[in-house]
Length: 228
Ligand SMILES: *Cc1c(COP(=O)(O)O)cnc(C)c1O
Image (cartoon, rainbow, N blue to C red; front, side, top):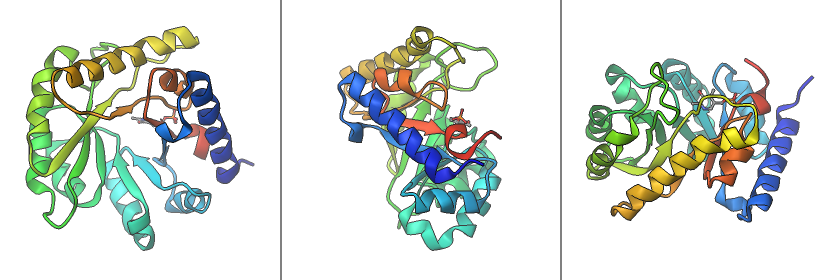
């Protein structure tokens, strides 16, 4: 019998140990609890354990969960981390705080146009296909500078950084390589004049490798809620 609160504590300990090894303050890393495929009650349990930032993959599933948790809306930060189609941007601009999975300019333009004026700017990350897998979503690193500059200029969104889902690898050194590559892409964009502060990388299996390469937000599902 797994307990969400116990699992959360274990994940926080892993993050703290990884920060310690990397010589980074533990506050430098935000834990995003990925609640996809789990019901609103599981989110409530994590909330009771002090968790405030949640990641969801599927727009439909997320919007009904956000509605069911309406009483907690002001205290929860909702992050979309899954693929986003043009025809779903309006609802996403209306209900989410962050979108990590922006993989083309068109999507960011629509989110900016559709973000309600009474809400703060929608916080965005650009998803990068860091392992170069042909079937994976995400921008090619070569397209990144032009897209990042264009997204950073949009009025109702704020470009915060980069996100990636590297190809799974078993050993720590192999896990670090794609995370290092994403960090270097962010450093290059910042050297070119942007001021990005977010590296969204690291999941249940590789959060230590990601934190060693300066991840600022780790997205953890299985290790908190159990297997899907
Ligand atoms: C599901 C998912 C996660 C969480 O993965 P776990 O291995 O369950 O921790 C993180 N990021 C994205 C984009 C996901 O789709």
